[in-house]
Image 1: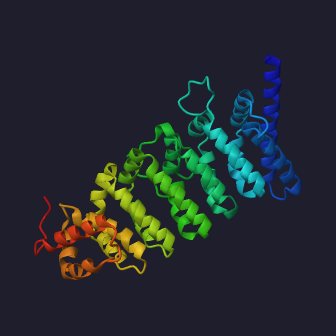
Image 2: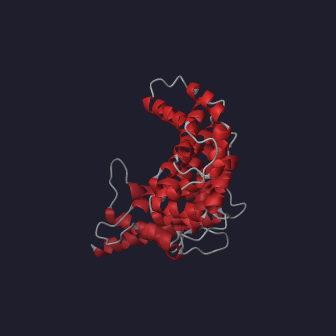
Image 3: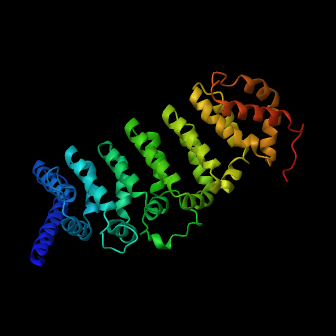
Length: 363
């Protein structure tokens, strides 16, 4: 049977090589419709080999051989670069090719992670950067986002997004997570994609951004600690104060989750010590949207519940004590079925009422 496997390998090598060559031609100017048509046929064949059909299951040997060829030919990088240029069905096929490649692990293998993931993390992180660049194009944004969220399940790939720097060849195993980044790498471009993109683009970009921030908690805790000022400056100014209702609401909710996660304790204490952050949250309580008010309340409560409030925070709360004690009892009265909210509101009222007349240095 060895000769049969050899023929399968040769066929898969040829398929992957042909796809790469056509993708390279597609990336050239004035490539013509014929390249798109030929490429669509080859990508459909690659997908069928990986996925099989309703009548015929895919062969594990053929899948393993094809994944190996995809890696050897650097096909994932070419796909990531050209995704926005592909016709709709070819983009869907490419998404399937990525999905199978990122998840496939040989049954007899001893690797901790799938070979395609190891290849990206150790040799070709540019695949992930090019997928992120897909948010520059409405045509590829959702396909790239779906692939990225699958890939981000691996911590090494999340590191690529967080620590990428322009003009620097990233080596994941050499990243010092305690060092701040320049603020110019791929991760920081998500703020622009979320803020400036069309509704479809910014919604998908935020979903991927959220996945990066919440999937690998210890990794992100170190990242936030090292990049605290830059991150929260952009987060507050671009996302929390976004003119988009959806972005604003999602961002405030995510902010609350970040601050209340135990692994982010030091970040939370730094955030709630700043008077400007409290002022921002108090403005949210009076937003015209009830849901924005509600999400803002869950950030505001972290400031008030903190037993070691900073002097700037104490000053704001004391100076606004009478207004807050008049405002909070009537705040979101319609949430009669939310007992926890009612209890938390009563607790905050009690805390504000019992604050000293003048600020006290925290212990």
